[in-house]
Length: 202
Image 1 (cartoon, helix red, strand yellow):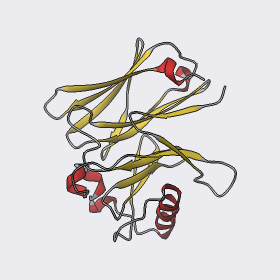
Image 2 (cartoon, rainbow, N blue to C red):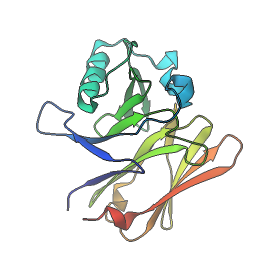
Image 3 (tube, helix red, strand yellow):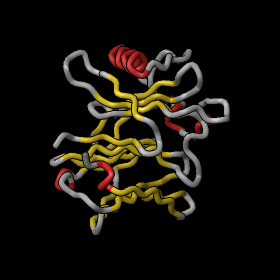
């Protein structure tokens, strides 16, 4: 059974992200009703100067991502780059204000202002297969941590600069259960986004 990738509440666009035969799937989220900007997105990592990379290789990677998504970059010449849970995250601000990102070696997408909200503060991607189980994505400002509940198993995601990542390949064979991704907010309240893992099976 192949590994399946799913983005929650968005439509998949399959895109080749590597020069070789490998590829990845990204999703481009629909534009929100607000004008896009780092502030409008309410994702601090988008404009944090400490995350801006001057490495030409990162610039080339951002240009490649822009080509893959078909979402043109804006006036920002250097992308944002940081790490979470041992994974490198790269993103750029598009000309229309969206923030396009990828977890290198995995997948990503493009977020517009209004895509994330207080009731649904997480943009979630899950990679699921016989020996693969990753859940990762981008969180709205105000989220301080992310926990994953898979049946009776509870996993705490690595969290840094609005990004989260959790992996437990032993759960790859799990089926017929509900996955709950719980965001803890700065006021200690929580928001839960749930979906059935059985829906990811072919």
